[in-house]
Length: 273
Length: 192
Image (spheres, rainbow over the protein chains, first blue to last red):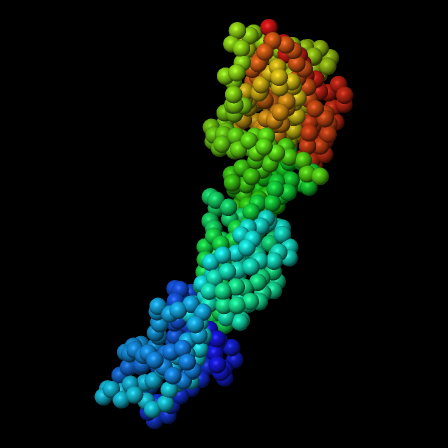
């Protein structure tokens, strides 16, 4: 979520502004740092302590200070805007409403930003374990200037930048034993977090593939019995067990099991030069 | 590359069956042989000969028509073995690999893992024994089944003997138990 002004130290539950309601009661309008559906913005604010409080009205529009739409949300302190257009900056503010329907004179501070980021594609869409400094292009919508991609465990994002609201660049490093995501393993989830915490996710947009060199566990240059022995010795162990051997956990799923043996068997006899 | 891909795909397809059922893996095909053929396997080192002692030899197993078995026998090796690689070569124009049966020498239960991968003119066998074992008398490590495709002869030999990750037996420290040139002997398959 991009903001036009910021007075707090960062986002999350930090305060982005204050406004006066009734006899000097203050609230803070913040963005809700969570995964939200596409085309939505979720807001949260501290409750107003005034006994006359009956509801809040959320104002929003696509021009700063000019709010073309609004809705009441009762006494709850969260609201979700839906059906927003991609890559349009929305401006939002809040008023408190008393039992007689009177609204506070002043708006809260204004915040602005895109609706939830919507990652959709990654190019290249896959890479092997033990890949360093791989440049990726992430396609989608609603990427703000501070949007940050995350690829899950085993994948380190070295750098990233937003090209436009529909395109990001990222440079990643995939660990040797990063979890493999090719079927039947679970797909990897790509997350893009906009400033303030709103995030969007896409499952399966990027796949970590098995690095066949890992089947040569002993680095002898050929996949054979000694590699098999490493697997067997660690068979059944999980991360943290004394017998666990990350080198034998070929698919990086945290357990040395038959899936690892299958990978080893597929590459059995292969010579690496 | 296509061959490798086909080989791997075929292997993968039957691999789970192998592991779960602990039975031999068919090498595919088998329909293109001549059913009138009778195949026999003659070992280069007969049981009881000096070359049999403390060595790994191929010995004849059962045979029926064109299909014959070759037993890989380990005869008394008191050194503890934790793994074995066997790379066995043959003329693929004469015989075709059919499958394998685990032998008792290195174990047949879940403590021993077998991976057998057939290729063009060779079969790669890897066996691991997590607890290690020694063999006090002649015992079969694995039995391989072949089928004669046509009349002719082919040697069945251990390739790259005492070479790491080719044909070798391993100690617990994963060093090779050297058997020497006479330590590995194959034989001759003849189909008429």
